[in-house]
Length: 131
Picture 1 (cartoon, rainbow, N blue to C red):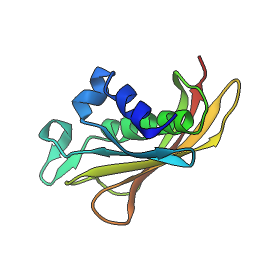
Picture 2: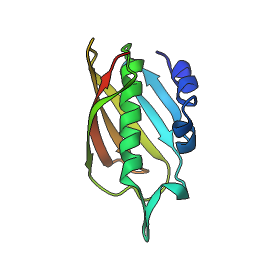
Picture 3: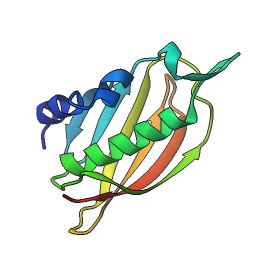
């Protein structure tokens, strides 16, 4: 699935629209999604830190879209694991994901979350059900 098709598809989901997700890039090697910083995602005010559930949602969504971009099919998450390395504190958030395995019963992808710097803030892996 190409970048334009994924970009059209991502805005169909109300949650993705609420997050403000945009597809920065997508091809068979992976996807990059971008999300702007918003006050509604803060779970700790001083210093402002993004809620871990939002970080997990970014990893989950990017993994599913990486499977689609690689030519697989996926409609939902079978399992997911998230590692939080550092707090997400401000600025644009980017998540990069790539498919590791495209399967008939389950596909697997991994994702990394970045802020404004080069260090990963979180990483994760998920398994996705086909239709």
